[in-house]
Length: 291
Image 1 (cartoon, rainbow, N blue to C red):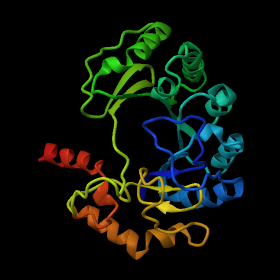
Image 2 (cartoon, helix red, strand yellow):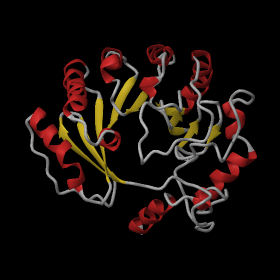
Image 3 (tube, one colour):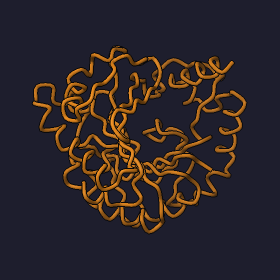
Image 4 (cartoon, rainbow, N blue to C red):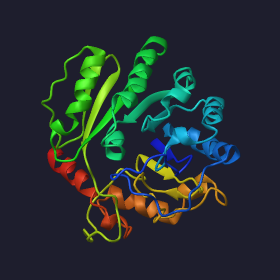
């Protein structure tokens, strides 16, 4: 039914990035029984499970056991991490048959530690890539680099380090106005994107016309069990139900879920919160391009 389900195993992070505002919900880490109860409902309904929405998945105190549960339900996993703890779990991640893709948010380090030497941060990540290629050559890895000023030069130091370590040259001619993934070494990709605003009732109301991939091809489940329609609803503003008292099947067949889905399919933003989401504008551009 879904391409992805964002299953937030923890909303706690070991960094505080300017581009990733802290959620307003109580800090929570899923225990193993909560995670397994959620996963066994999610696994049959999605192609891929992403172990985050907010939070740093590798900071979960039982992350190794989380991977074992994913193996039990034969669930393909995508990991997105800032990479600070990658040394702790390198072997477990690479040797897990479930982990299909790992995304490193490389923009996180300088955002938190502008004056620190970046080599100590990047080297373990680069070693992970090399080891992963040797042991698990079908593992996809993305280096995420956000552009603050629509200019690839914002990431020049990181690009130079990548070139030096992997003995490659990276073409700087990237159209940062759109999301672009660039293959640079085996199954290692650079993923460029521009910053976005997290939806908020404090943003202007953009009206009722628009569409989104939320609820159509993905949903999110917050660490407290709240089901939300998209990966940007970090605080559960659109609470579709909670897995602690409803099944996922009951939630996706509910009137509110169905109304949102029908609305998006017809270009209508049913929920007030969606009307305060500027990310919707990206889909307007996509529609115009197709026309």
